[in-house]
Image (tube, rainbow, N blue to C red; front, side):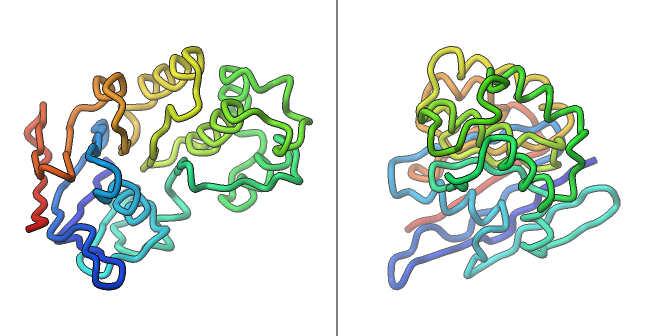
Length: 223
């Protein structure tokens, strides 16, 4: 069983507080949608969850395969992450970027999820194309492939449908449905059509949390 526990989380930049006292717990199969206006802290929260940013207050704990850790470096190496701020190496081909990602994560290039995700994303014909030559939509599909490769215990998606067309959104929806029972997914979004994917919604601006299951609670105080 995979568990994610966030306790009394707070962060600020200089004298500007982004959020404080964020507390929630998620279990395997949960999908949390983080919503709120621009600047409310959605991306900052997701970067902390992914282990890319160390919070100035509070802890994030992940339990997986008998290991319970609050180490952001451990979490980062076991988390799938896609975001607008994530930059790929433009001088690499699609295949080379996937190979580099797998080497960093100790994944085998024979992992069946690689071929499955690449084919379903429609990137087979682009595998030898340089990243710099991809359209914004195809680049986003590649970022999502990297997030789902190896089926990590925690998948963090910041504005996942940005630049995707209707076909790409449909592909992502199918991926989420296929893996949701085997992982925890956290999505930052202001897109209404993405909310039905989520089992829980947390609004960072209004501090309102809604849930469909009883195993998750959250609270934020920005006053």
